[in-house]
Image 1 (cartoon, helix red, strand yellow):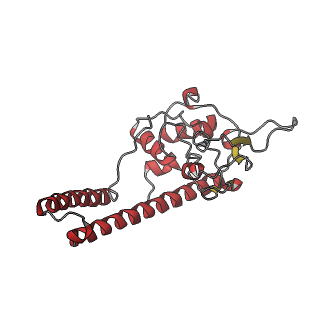
Image 2 (image 1 turned 90 degrees about the horizontal axis):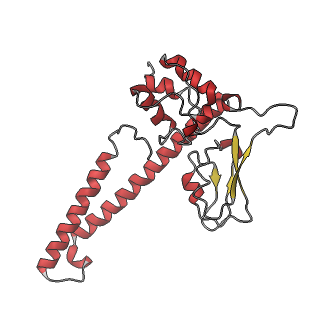
Image 3 (image 1 turned 90 degrees about the vertical axis):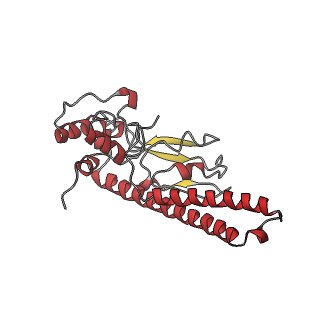
Length: 235
């Protein structure tokens, strides 16, 4: 099967899912590049080499990396100071590749090989116990690798797969939750008097109307999940 242009563009991106380009993920940025609503120089993790890759594919001039989106730098990995971690789980929810493990009120830790250095865990940490450390920091003999020199295609593919798996898991969980809420509402609706302290028929009828409206919204939301939507740039 022939790849779409969006897929070919996406294959040239580092898959850090860092949102620095202004889009919610690498795939959305690729889609925006295809339709011409984004420039090729908005991906700091890919660096100038990444800009040149995109320029070659799309036939556009190889612009300098736009500093408004950040600067090319070394590959980094998140490190959690476990002495300060309070187990709030906010970083788990922010991590695009499920590279952080832990549970509520228990210290968290980072699986380094899965971390993309996206920085998304930093702003959500309420106790500032996370820092980003450069991978392979210079020892004075060799310069620190940056951009694609510091991030391999194999790492990008692994990050893509883990991000996709995470999105699929979140979608399954959201659908399951929606199903539970719908089932609960349908159960109440089937025998409304036994689920209500009210006995006034008029009150029960108003309550029935409210539940039916809520069910209609829930079913509409469930149906909307199957519809694809165009990528939106982050504010």
